[in-house]
Amino acid sequence: MFELNTKRLLANAARADTLELMDRVTVLREHLEAEALEIAEAELARRGITPEEIAAHGRKWKHRVLRDENGMVWCCSWCGRAAVAEEIGWHRWLGLIPIWRRRYRYCETHWRQYHPEAPWA
Ligand SMILES: [Zn+2]
Image (cartoon, rainbow, N blue to C red):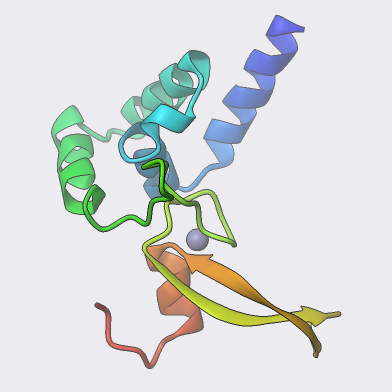
């Protein structure tokens, strides 16, 4: 079982977007189990990301990510990056028919994708 988990973590890290991996090892660090953290760091090193770049990424985002009352960082509703913006929107059945209001959280990438017209705060 341990090996299966390691394989799953390796495959997940290999597929993950570089910015998502950088979020994981910085602002989302405390959410990760030790092995997942180690694998994410190794994958970043394999992609040629330096420890300095990772530290700069952490400094850039640590005061901008959204946190709950316990200080845990919220994740984007659309991917595994840390959320930096939120809004109340409609949950739509089949993507069309508004059913209920819910809170959507966005990472930088998805905020820009869903709000191309909005100024970046
Ligand atoms: Zn996202």
